[in-house]
Image 1 (cartoon, rainbow, N blue to C red):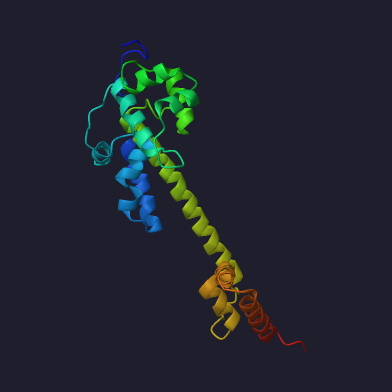
Image 2 (cartoon, rainbow, N blue to C red; image 1 turned 180 degrees about the vertical axis):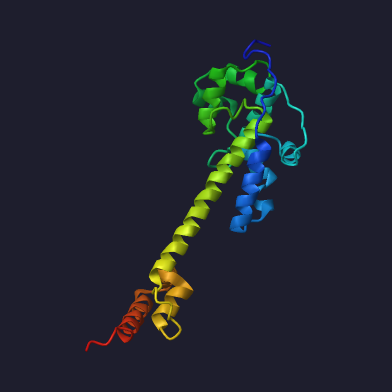
Length: 228
């Protein structure tokens, strides 16, 4: 076997538990099911870490750590199983070689474990499969932490979007608080501007949407303050 990376070094400490706690709290705030947020298969595909190891690490238990060669082979196999061609088939060794700018013999030796990968090999294969830098080489806890950080970013975006919608709805409601007899205020409180627009957009034809517009015009006209 030809040389590639130097011998594995000790696994660096990764604040995985802290990230897990933050993501769990954010999921609770959004009312998301933990089984969805911490789906083992999804996190495995996102991190390259085997699903059973993901589960062990999420529970805060040690899972061991494969050496660099085993980690590379494990994650390359996962990429070939989960990042498929548009027709649903796996990429061949020749297609990987062409896409990564190496010979078929080099690609075959790497895939079969007959040659240790270099950083250049890893970078080229990662670019070919469209995954982030370090996907093939990061330690398991670090790789899982990185996947959870991306989950956290998505949840934060969802939270910000929800808060923007709530703020918009609050802005559309009259500030005097006396909306009990105001049909327009009740409408905005119940649905909000975006809700009304979305519902109207689902109607089957322009004729139906025109009816909604006509009704809203009538409602707005009926709640205009008297001019005197």
